[in-house]
Amino acid sequence: MGKTDVRRDAIMHAIKDKGSIALTDIVQQFAVSEATARRDLEILEQEKRCIRTFGGAVLESLKVEVPFFNKMDLFTEEKKEIADKALRYIEDGDIIGLTGGTTTTFIAKKLNQFKNLTVITNAVNIAYELIGTQGLQLILTGGVIRTQTFELSGPLANATLENLSIRKTFMGVDGISLSRGMMIYNELEAETNRRMMKQSMETYLVADHSKFSRSSLFVIGEVQETIGIISDSKITPEMKHAFKEAGAPFL
Image (tube, rainbow, N blue to C red; front, top):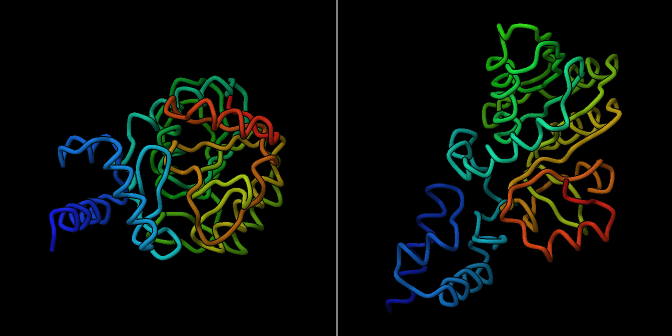
């Protein structure tokens, strides 16, 4: 096995360990040029071993779902940036919905600065994060829990949401594409997310740069169904222009 194959196997080992890898990490860890790193990822994607993203690569998401706690350690600074941006669209007195996910969890961690807020969520970990927060009314849906994501979904969750009116929902996803829309790994969770969108006056898509052009199994809806996208500063001008032209601007 040549040096190139050894390096690519090592890159895949790193991706499997953390669920993703950044292009800059490949350059630094393996002492190669950015062009070589991009070529390695291109070959690995052709071999269907990973999916390239803007700035790196992730596991082949149609086959592998990264566990929640592994994802919490990925792109943490980017998720904190997104959470700070999301707070600009929340006001005292709001009724907000938070779907499950690591990005929405980072938003939940910052909601203690509001004095009067109602939060509706189907994520057990988010509910645990918010329990006891002064001035916050918390509504947790029923439903069947998935240990991979800590989300409640299914008919019980959907029935709860049908009786609620939500002002603003912040939705996390596993993948985003202009052609396929907003995607998630589990069918029941996709249906519950669609229900939360339907009950909301406004929906904001919250996702870090690694989710773009990444695929997953089940479609929640089109990106254009949201008010707009809240992401991190690593989104390229070309990406911003493409989504704006399609009617889904970055906020």
